[in-house]
Image (cartoon, rainbow, N blue to C red; front, side):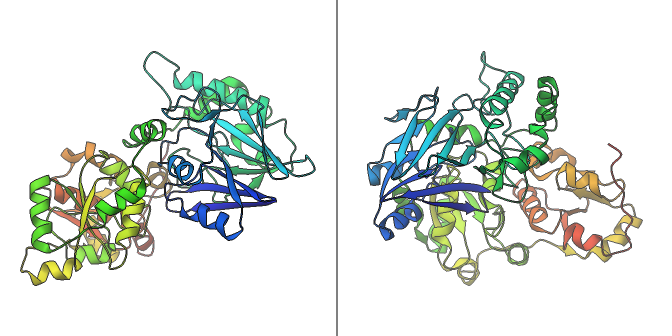
Length: 464
C-alpha cells in the first residue's frame, strides 16, 4: 500500500493518491490532473476510483477531467446532487482498491454531503481517514458555506458537525492518521495548524473542537465565533464542481496567447479586462502599466485573486515573469478564473520599448515612517484582525486587505497616506487596487511590520 499526500502550498490544499496491488484511487484532485496520471502510468496501475469529500468552495476539483481521461467513476457521499454521472455512496459503503478498502463515512456539517473516507490496510486495520473539510488539524470546517435560503442555518450545520465528529470520527482509534483537505492559510477554517498530517489521538488532545467535555452549545459558539465573510468566488467554485466545467486544456489554449503591446492594449480597452500583474512587489513598484492590479505569483496568488477580483467570469490579461505564463493560467483556473485572454509578449520591457505609459508606487522605509507618525500623518494597516491585535501602531487605521473594496471611502485622494502589511506583499496589492480605483496618494512601507519592529516605533496590543 502506498499513500501519498500531494500538497499545494499556495492553496493550502491536500490531494491524495492511494495505490495497492495494481490499482489506485485519488481523493480531492486539483484541476490539473497530470500529476495523478503520471504516477499511475509510472507504476503501471489503473486509477479505479476518484473520491470527492464534498463540493469544494475554494478550488475547482479535477474530478471530471480525471474521470474523462481514466474512465474511473467519481464517488460522492450521501446527499450530493451533481449534474453528471457519479456513484453516490451510502454511509458505510466500502470500495476495494487492490488489497485495501476505503469506506465512506457520512460526516455532514461543513456541508450536508461532506464525507470522510476511512482507509483500511490489507489486514483490515484502520489506517487513515481523509477528512476533507470535516476535520482539519487544529480546527474543523466552517459551517457557513452551505447555507441556502429557507434551509439550514450555520448554527444548525454546526450542530450537525458536532454530531458527525462525535459519532463517526472520535470513536476511531487514536493511532489513525488524519489527512485533511486543507492546512494553515485556507479560508475554510480559522485555527489550522501548519502541519499537514497528524494522528487522531493527538488531535483529540490539541484540537479545541474535539474536547470530550465540550457541549454542543459550546461547540457551536466556538466554531462560529470569529468567522469572516467567505470570499466572493466560493459560490462559483461550488457551482462548477457540482455542474461541470471546461477542460483545463481548453482554458490553456485560450489563455496561453502572447499579445504584442499594441494588441494587449487594444484587447484591454475593447474587453475591459482586468490587467493582472503577477511579478514581484518590487518590480511592480518600480514600473507597471496604469490600472494594473498586482497580485504576485509568489504568494497566496489564487485565493487573493478570487477574494479581490471576485467575478470569475471577468476577462483577464496577464503580465508575468518570463516563462511563468502557463503556471499563472493554471493557478487561475484552480479557483475558476477561466477567462484569461492572453499575456503581454515580452513583458513590461516590451511595453516600455513601445513608448507606452507606465507608473510607479512610492516607498518609504520603516525608519522614515517614524517621522511620519510623529507628524500625525495618516496610516493604514491591511493585515488581518488577529495580526493587528497581536501588535500594531497606535491610532493606525485597520482595513484588512480582503475588505478593501468595501472601504474605499476611507482613503483620501487629496493627501498622502502610508500603508503597511506584514512584509510588503499585501500592501502592494492594496495600493494597486486603490490606484485602479483612482486613489493615487498611497505610499508603501517597505518590509511592513517585520521592518517596523526593528525600529524605535512603539507598538501596542489590542485590548480585545
